Image (cartoon, rainbow, N blue to C red; front, side):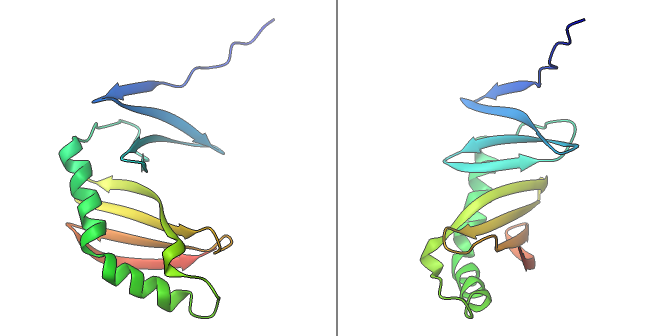
Length: 128
């Protein structure tokens, strides 16, 4: 008997393609907007507007000085540069809360996670 591979759903909205990704036993939605990967772990995919996505990106830009200072402090024992920091993805936790992962090419498996609520950084964590 042949088994058919179960197809995972794909959604296209405003020219953006969102797909379900399986990571071990977890499923989540992933899409890319303005070269930034966005994720949501909700079972139901509530399509954000491009205005909402731009708002999330502005939260990051408005807090760039604080983010860079934190990256510099966290990486002071390693000879790495803040300039190598890049956005590794944004997880939408709710319409008013996102988590942003920062990684760097020369950081190994280290990363910093910044949680924003209504545009303000409320939590920060580092790990590998």
